[in-house]
Length: 266
Image (tube, rainbow, N blue to C red):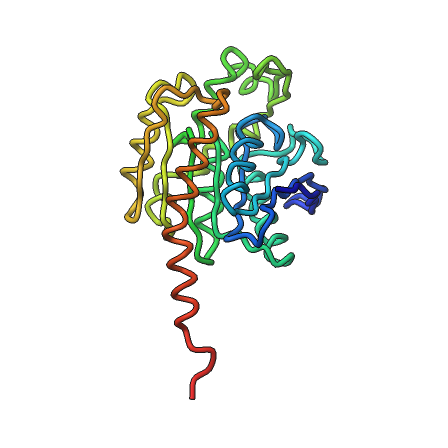
Protein backbone atom coordinates (compact mmCIF):
# COMPACT_ATOMS: atom_id res chain seq x y z
CA UNK A 1 0.00 0.00 0.00
CA UNK A 2 1.15 3.52 -0.78
CA UNK A 3 -0.04 7.02 0.12
CA UNK A 4 0.18 9.97 -2.24
CA UNK A 5 -0.58 13.66 -1.84
CA UNK A 6 -3.78 14.66 -3.60
CA UNK A 7 -4.45 18.36 -3.14
CA UNK A 8 -7.21 20.19 -5.00
CA UNK A 9 -9.27 23.37 -4.97
CA UNK A 10 -12.48 23.26 -2.93
CA UNK A 11 -15.84 24.86 -3.52
CA UNK A 12 -14.79 28.20 -1.96
CA UNK A 13 -11.59 28.40 -4.00
CA UNK A 14 -9.22 27.29 -1.23
CA UNK A 15 -6.55 24.63 -1.61
CA UNK A 16 -7.61 21.49 0.22
CA UNK A 17 -5.14 18.94 1.52
CA UNK A 18 -5.80 15.33 0.56
CA UNK A 19 -4.13 11.95 0.77
CA UNK A 20 -4.78 9.09 -1.62
CA UNK A 21 -4.25 5.63 -0.13
CA UNK A 22 -3.67 3.08 -2.90
CA UNK A 23 -3.33 -0.71 -3.00
CA UNK A 24 -0.19 -2.23 -4.47
CA UNK A 25 -2.11 -3.55 -7.46
CA UNK A 26 -4.60 -1.81 -9.76
CA UNK A 27 -7.56 -0.60 -7.63
CA UNK A 28 -10.86 -2.48 -7.93
CA UNK A 29 -12.59 0.86 -7.34
CA UNK A 30 -12.10 4.27 -5.73
CA UNK A 31 -13.65 5.64 -2.58
CA UNK A 32 -14.06 9.18 -1.27
CA UNK A 33 -14.00 9.49 2.52
CA UNK A 34 -15.53 12.33 4.58
CA UNK A 35 -14.20 12.78 8.12
CA UNK A 36 -16.23 13.67 11.21
CA UNK A 37 -17.12 17.19 12.41
CA UNK A 38 -13.96 19.25 13.26
CA UNK A 39 -11.83 16.15 12.63
CA UNK A 40 -9.21 15.86 9.86
CA UNK A 41 -8.04 13.38 7.26
CA UNK A 42 -5.55 12.15 9.87
CA UNK A 43 -8.12 11.21 12.51
CA UNK A 44 -7.83 7.62 13.70
CA UNK A 45 -11.08 6.55 12.03
CA UNK A 46 -10.21 8.24 8.71
CA UNK A 47 -6.73 6.75 8.48
CA UNK A 48 -7.66 3.28 9.66
CA UNK A 49 -10.76 2.92 7.48
CA UNK A 50 -8.98 4.31 4.41
CA UNK A 51 -5.96 2.04 4.82
CA UNK A 52 -8.12 -0.99 5.55
CA UNK A 53 -10.10 -0.32 2.37
CA UNK A 54 -6.84 0.10 0.45
CA UNK A 55 -5.69 -3.26 1.79
CA UNK A 56 -8.85 -4.69 0.25
CA UNK A 57 -8.18 -3.23 -3.17
CA UNK A 58 -9.73 0.24 -3.05
CA UNK A 59 -8.03 3.53 -3.76
CA UNK A 60 -9.26 5.97 -1.09
CA UNK A 61 -9.12 9.76 -0.99
CA UNK A 62 -9.37 11.35 2.47
CA UNK A 63 -9.03 15.11 2.73
CA UNK A 64 -9.42 18.02 5.15
CA UNK A 65 -12.56 20.08 4.76
CA UNK A 66 -12.13 23.86 4.36
CA UNK A 67 -10.41 25.45 7.35
CA UNK A 68 -9.34 22.18 8.96
CA UNK A 69 -6.02 20.35 9.10
CA UNK A 70 -3.79 21.29 6.18
CA UNK A 71 -6.56 22.88 4.10
CA UNK A 72 -6.92 26.57 3.39
CA UNK A 73 -9.78 28.86 4.31
CA UNK A 74 -11.35 29.55 7.68
CA UNK A 75 -13.47 27.00 9.48
CA UNK A 76 -15.76 29.76 10.76
CA UNK A 77 -16.60 30.71 7.17
CA UNK A 78 -17.39 27.16 6.12
CA UNK A 79 -20.50 25.18 6.95
CA UNK A 80 -22.34 21.99 6.13
CA UNK A 81 -23.13 23.25 2.63
CA UNK A 82 -19.44 24.04 2.21
CA UNK A 83 -18.52 20.49 3.23
CA UNK A 84 -20.93 19.10 0.65
CA UNK A 85 -19.43 21.41 -1.96
CA UNK A 86 -15.91 20.26 -1.02
CA UNK A 87 -16.98 16.64 -1.51
CA UNK A 88 -18.37 17.44 -4.95
CA UNK A 89 -15.12 19.23 -5.82
CA UNK A 90 -13.13 16.22 -4.61
CA UNK A 91 -15.24 13.86 -6.74
CA UNK A 92 -14.71 16.11 -9.76
CA UNK A 93 -10.94 16.22 -9.31
CA UNK A 94 -10.78 12.46 -8.77
CA UNK A 95 -12.73 11.94 -11.98
CA UNK A 96 -10.41 14.25 -13.92
CA UNK A 97 -7.45 12.30 -12.51
CA UNK A 98 -8.90 9.05 -13.85
CA UNK A 99 -9.99 7.90 -10.38
CA UNK A 100 -13.73 8.59 -10.42
CA UNK A 101 -15.19 7.58 -7.04
CA UNK A 102 -17.72 4.76 -7.09
CA UNK A 103 -17.93 4.52 -3.30
CA UNK A 104 -18.65 7.34 -0.82
CA UNK A 105 -17.93 6.77 2.88
CA UNK A 106 -18.70 9.27 5.62
CA UNK A 107 -18.13 9.26 9.38
CA UNK A 108 -20.47 11.13 11.76
CA UNK A 109 -21.43 14.51 10.20
CA UNK A 110 -19.26 13.43 7.27
CA UNK A 111 -21.81 10.65 6.78
CA UNK A 112 -24.57 13.23 6.48
CA UNK A 113 -22.39 15.14 4.01
CA UNK A 114 -21.85 12.14 1.72
CA UNK A 115 -25.61 11.51 1.70
CA UNK A 116 -26.11 15.10 0.57
CA UNK A 117 -23.33 14.92 -2.02
CA UNK A 118 -24.49 11.54 -3.35
CA UNK A 119 -27.90 12.99 -4.15
CA UNK A 120 -26.14 15.32 -6.60
CA UNK A 121 -24.01 12.67 -8.30
CA UNK A 122 -25.41 10.56 -11.13
CA UNK A 123 -22.51 8.16 -11.71
CA UNK A 124 -23.01 4.59 -10.38
CA UNK A 125 -21.77 4.45 -6.81
CA UNK A 126 -22.45 2.98 -3.40
CA UNK A 127 -22.80 5.02 -0.20
CA UNK A 128 -21.83 3.99 3.32
CA UNK A 129 -22.36 5.99 6.51
CA UNK A 130 -20.71 5.36 9.88
CA UNK A 131 -22.32 6.81 13.04
CA UNK A 132 -24.08 9.49 11.01
CA UNK A 133 -26.82 11.78 12.33
CA UNK A 134 -30.18 11.83 10.54
CA UNK A 135 -30.81 15.53 11.16
CA UNK A 136 -27.70 17.66 10.59
CA UNK A 137 -28.87 20.06 13.33
CA UNK A 138 -27.95 17.29 15.76
CA UNK A 139 -24.41 18.69 15.77
CA UNK A 140 -25.58 21.83 17.60
CA UNK A 141 -25.96 19.69 20.71
CA UNK A 142 -22.17 19.71 20.95
CA UNK A 143 -22.13 23.48 21.48
CA UNK A 144 -23.88 23.22 24.86
CA UNK A 145 -24.07 26.67 26.48
CA UNK A 146 -22.39 28.27 23.46
CA UNK A 147 -25.47 27.86 21.27
CA UNK A 148 -27.38 30.64 23.04
CA UNK A 149 -24.40 32.99 22.70
CA UNK A 150 -24.06 32.17 18.99
CA UNK A 151 -27.72 33.00 18.37
CA UNK A 152 -27.59 36.20 20.42
CA UNK A 153 -24.20 37.62 19.41
CA UNK A 154 -23.72 36.07 15.98
CA UNK A 155 -20.76 33.91 16.93
CA UNK A 156 -19.02 32.27 19.87
CA UNK A 157 -15.97 30.18 20.65
CA UNK A 158 -16.94 26.69 21.70
CA UNK A 159 -14.91 23.78 22.99
CA UNK A 160 -15.11 20.72 20.74
CA UNK A 161 -13.06 17.74 21.75
CA UNK A 162 -10.73 19.91 23.82
CA UNK A 163 -10.07 22.39 20.99
CA UNK A 164 -11.54 25.88 20.56
CA UNK A 165 -13.57 26.63 17.42
CA UNK A 166 -15.40 29.78 16.39
CA UNK A 167 -18.96 28.95 15.34
CA UNK A 168 -21.08 31.58 13.62
CA UNK A 169 -24.84 31.97 13.38
CA UNK A 170 -24.53 31.46 9.62
CA UNK A 171 -23.45 27.89 10.39
CA UNK A 172 -26.64 27.30 12.39
CA UNK A 173 -28.78 28.96 9.73
CA UNK A 174 -27.24 26.77 7.04
CA UNK A 175 -28.04 23.59 8.97
CA UNK A 176 -31.72 24.57 9.02
CA UNK A 177 -31.80 24.58 5.21
CA UNK A 178 -31.11 20.86 4.85
CA UNK A 179 -33.97 18.36 4.77
CA UNK A 180 -32.00 15.14 5.02
CA UNK A 181 -35.14 13.00 5.22
CA UNK A 182 -36.36 14.14 1.82
CA UNK A 183 -32.84 13.94 0.44
CA UNK A 184 -32.34 10.36 1.62
CA UNK A 185 -35.73 9.34 0.24
CA UNK A 186 -34.57 10.52 -3.19
CA UNK A 187 -31.21 8.76 -2.96
CA UNK A 188 -30.77 6.60 -6.05
CA UNK A 189 -27.70 4.70 -4.83
CA UNK A 190 -27.28 1.55 -2.68
CA UNK A 191 -26.88 2.53 0.99
CA UNK A 192 -25.13 0.85 3.91
CA UNK A 193 -25.76 2.23 7.41
CA UNK A 194 -23.23 1.33 10.11
CA UNK A 195 -23.90 2.39 13.70
CA UNK A 196 -23.23 1.27 17.25
CA UNK A 197 -26.19 0.90 19.62
CA UNK A 198 -23.87 2.17 22.36
CA UNK A 199 -22.93 5.39 20.55
CA UNK A 200 -23.17 8.12 23.21
CA UNK A 201 -22.68 11.02 20.76
CA UNK A 202 -25.08 10.18 17.93
CA UNK A 203 -27.74 7.78 19.19
CA UNK A 204 -28.73 4.62 17.38
CA UNK A 205 -32.16 6.14 16.62
CA UNK A 206 -30.41 8.20 13.94
CA UNK A 207 -29.45 5.04 12.08
CA UNK A 208 -33.06 3.85 12.27
CA UNK A 209 -34.31 7.14 10.82
CA UNK A 210 -31.79 7.05 7.97
CA UNK A 211 -32.61 3.45 7.17
CA UNK A 212 -36.38 3.99 7.21
CA UNK A 213 -36.12 7.10 5.03
CA UNK A 214 -34.05 5.33 2.37
CA UNK A 215 -35.40 3.19 -0.44
CA UNK A 216 -33.97 -0.20 -1.33
CA UNK A 217 -31.30 -1.37 -1.87
CA UNK A 218 -30.27 -0.58 1.69
CA UNK A 219 -28.53 -2.46 4.49
CA UNK A 220 -27.85 -1.93 8.20
CA UNK A 221 -25.07 -3.46 10.29
CA UNK A 222 -24.59 -2.94 14.01
CA UNK A 223 -21.10 -1.99 15.23
CA UNK A 224 -21.94 -3.54 18.59
CA UNK A 225 -19.96 -1.86 21.39
CA UNK A 226 -17.87 0.52 19.27
CA UNK A 227 -17.68 4.14 20.42
CA UNK A 228 -18.62 7.09 18.21
CA UNK A 229 -15.07 7.87 17.07
CA UNK A 230 -14.11 4.20 16.51
CA UNK A 231 -11.08 4.71 18.74
CA UNK A 232 -10.36 0.98 18.85
CA UNK A 233 -8.52 -0.03 15.70
CA UNK A 234 -10.43 -3.31 15.48
CA UNK A 235 -13.73 -1.41 15.17
CA UNK A 236 -12.47 0.76 12.31
CA UNK A 237 -11.03 -2.24 10.47
CA UNK A 238 -14.26 -4.19 10.98
CA UNK A 239 -16.26 -1.30 9.53
CA UNK A 240 -13.93 -1.14 6.51
CA UNK A 241 -14.20 -4.90 5.93
CA UNK A 242 -17.98 -4.69 5.97
CA UNK A 243 -17.99 -1.76 3.57
CA UNK A 244 -15.58 -3.48 1.17
CA UNK A 245 -17.55 -6.72 1.01
CA UNK A 246 -20.91 -4.95 0.73
CA UNK A 247 -19.78 -2.46 -1.93
CA UNK A 248 -18.15 -5.16 -4.05
CA UNK A 249 -21.55 -6.59 -4.97
CA UNK A 250 -22.71 -3.31 -6.46
CA UNK A 251 -19.41 -2.27 -8.01
CA UNK A 252 -18.81 -5.68 -9.57
CA UNK A 253 -22.35 -5.68 -10.98
CA UNK A 254 -21.75 -2.21 -12.42
CA UNK A 255 -18.62 -3.44 -14.17
CA UNK A 256 -20.46 -6.46 -15.59
CA UNK A 257 -23.23 -4.17 -16.83
CA UNK A 258 -20.66 -1.85 -18.39
CA UNK A 259 -18.99 -4.73 -20.19
CA UNK A 260 -22.33 -5.89 -21.61
CA UNK A 261 -23.15 -2.49 -23.12
CA UNK A 262 -22.19 -2.49 -26.85
CA UNK A 263 -19.57 0.11 -27.77
CA UNK A 264 -21.43 0.98 -30.95
CA UNK A 265 -24.81 0.43 -32.55
CA UNK A 266 -24.68 -1.27 -35.99
